[in-house]
Length: 221
Image (tube, rainbow, N blue to C red; front, side, top):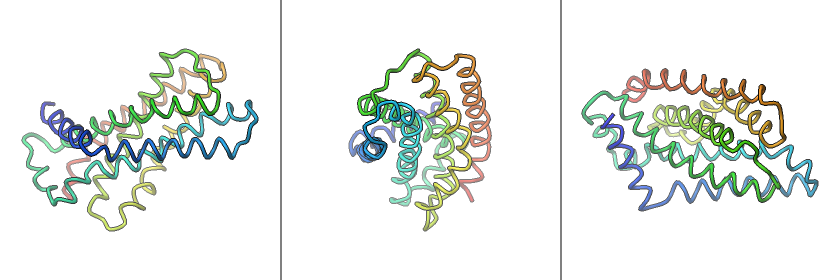
């Protein structure tokens, strides 16, 4: 686990200096939320009903931008082989990259939630459950996006291949996160919320185990 934290702290330190990922993703997600707000019109009820889908669509597309930079510095400098020489198993490389990406995506999610609440006049109920929904939903996006970013990092068409590979796998995350957020923003039934949270948690656990086990083979090939 120490190796994973070293890699994560290295990536976070680089991001702290350049701020490339946060600047790009925050601007992109805010732009998506703003454009969709204008497109939906001034009807407050319509805006509130559409807000969960817009919110998670913005986070889903922004996660692609963040994931493309997960191995960006190593790929641009030709240091991927050096990355594989970190002591310990290669799965810790994935965990470290995932930790860094996850923390950055949580910052992005917080900014997007505030932006959406202002534009769509949202009132979040049961704040602890909202935080849990964001934690689980963002984790699902991060696991899948970082894993497929490793697979496509050396391909010429990686920018177009990453969303094609990622989005079909992320369908359970999108459905669960949007549905859970709708329950929380529209005072839905809590029993329904628990079912969606279980879906998100189950997906995260399974995808984390599968991605961690397959990552060494994916990166080497």
